[in-house]
Length: 284
Image: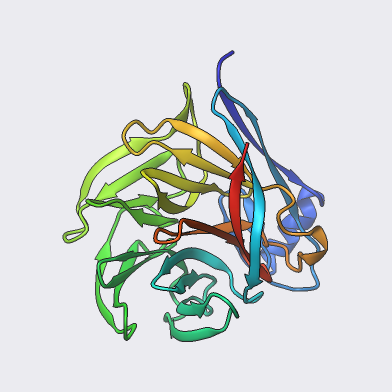
């Protein structure tokens, strides 16, 4: 059977209603989904991904859950030396923050100028590197002080970012990952991502885990496990049901956020506006 990954967006309200909401300026459109910030608005979409693939599909076991700021539009997440570092989005609300794992309390924060929409985040040596969505500029911060050090530029949108031992690895919502030199930020190579012969698009937040690239697939409850050498999908992680439906409180509260604790072999996941962050163990 030919491996196929199908993605489809089902609008719960008629298209005309969605159009009216967008005309009046509620939120931001990214990819195929409308992100609506107003608490009182209903969920405008429901997204699924149907996987018919030879790659294994993993489930999960919840090991522990921690508090997470439900006002955080999570775009990037990393774990380092006992703390979470998080990038949040939305114009006028984008931040880089240091967060206490056990309590979810924000210990340190830098707020971006309102013209920037924060996206992915990674840590290279002692520097935090953050992307922006459509502004085509990234920022480098001192990890300790959060002082901005310099900027870099790229020709695509900025979605997720991680790194291996040699390169920064960046996504832009397409089926391509970009490998960059961590000092010059120059493009080294492009890597198409595929499940068999089918390209996999909407790659979002990234994390490098045990020699693989983990990628949230935007607007779904799936994480793709990707070979950084070939771009082949090595497996899928199905996180359906992770957050109780009653805990959803906004229109854009989709899964997005992966962090890995290499020292203790712990995997953390969360989502946009989620009130919880979960430590999980993968199951078959």
